[in-house]
Image 1: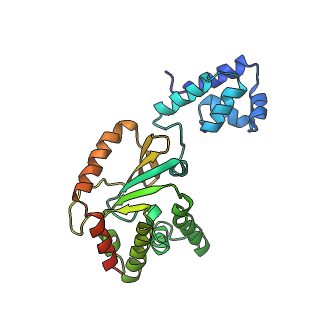
Image 2: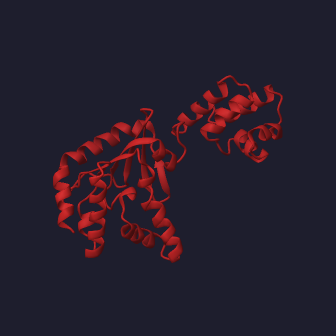
Image 3: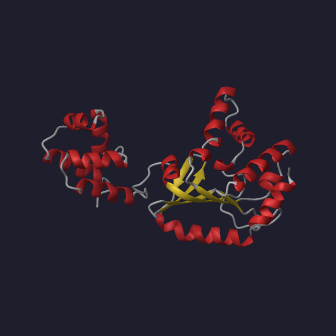
Length: 253
């Protein structure tokens, strides 16, 4: 199969339908340049556009099948194209980090510290916007449940005021029943992955594994699932029980 399987299929089915790129763009309510990029392989449409393209070209499901095959070859699931879509589609997420509190569980003070360190020239307004986006996110995902494992020192090692606010924030989410915390003990040498790992279980039953890197979130190929599961299992076997993790957080307030 060509790596541009979808691009080739789109060109073929559009021509079989007797449509120009401009005519197809008009039916799709997109710009002709978008259709041109899809056919050249420069970009790939999202799922809803792929389904519409199949309908508008009367491909009978063949074009959408080509889109799914291309997405699978690229290691990208057909139900999501970015982290925001994955979070919206997920019903459960497992977070494992070697250092730091996972983004969705950060308190406003903690998030501000993180963003200020990464963007020292940001204005107060820009920082406030970033903090709001991060800290309001979990509340916007009422169906998402989270299991998080990270070092106890990620909270205990903070300055007193920041330590207390982050501990309270985590305890608040734990009380909702939506968040389960298993911290790795202070001073323990755990086989944690270098980059944060996130395992999302979708409502459809599918799964996506992703990792945070300096240039953004990277979705891992499905072949990596077993290796990631082995690391997570090893970490959890050394982590504190939930009750002990909560007691530790309470001691920080």
